[in-house]
Image (cartoon, rainbow, N blue to C red; front, side, top):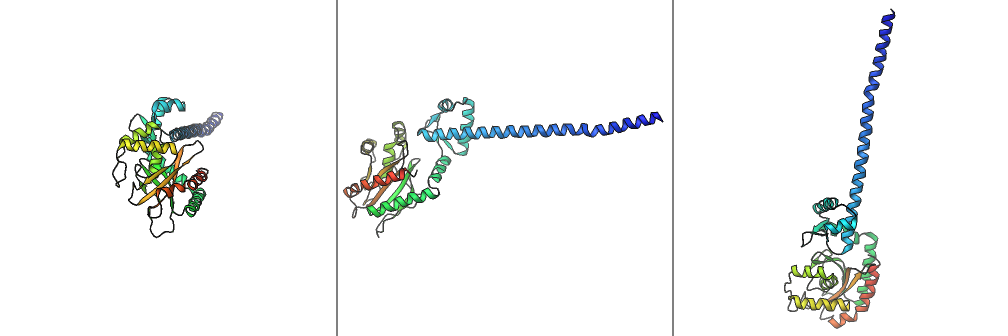
Length: 289
């Protein structure tokens, strides 16, 4: 009787111990999984932060950077910088330069920047500046930016004339024969300008188009010195234009304001007479970048 009682107690004790023993590993597994998830989140957050820092550096530098430069400037091991660059190349946020050892702004990052530039309330304020400028100068005005190897129209306000050239927002035009395009070329750092000019096609659009590099370089040097650019029927016969830079707080040219019209209404001298109005509007635009 006593033996049976002891066996029963032992059995009950054994039975109550077994479920607790089974639950303990599950609890530990849950804690381990939670810790692993937290580690993964921390790693992902760190990788995202490093990627954003890398993109910000490339975008702000104004030139392509080597892996060694990125590693040194960001304080990252070369292996980490290489991994980030490979990922960002794959997503289109970075692109290789003509020198494949260098990394520059990719099409996805460029589009992101343009979308941000055109976003919401600020876009409306810029459009108001453009509309006021058109009312003052009496001709169509454009707000443009450099997009790769061409000029991109970000905004445009048409003058109320029956004869005018229509270019939709989002249109790309050449660099070498437009007022804005030559302005952007003239503002590039010497190395970037030289590299781009070496690869840039120079098709003849009109009898006045500059299609030889020495003549174009002379023109760009003059533009850099005077701070504005003209299109003397170089893109479209019978059309002249004047462009001025829109700079950020560091003085870097980020966009351009341009006015254009047919020679029947707007000679080059007439366009230059509107230079003070364009310069004042560009200053207002600079505060809206």
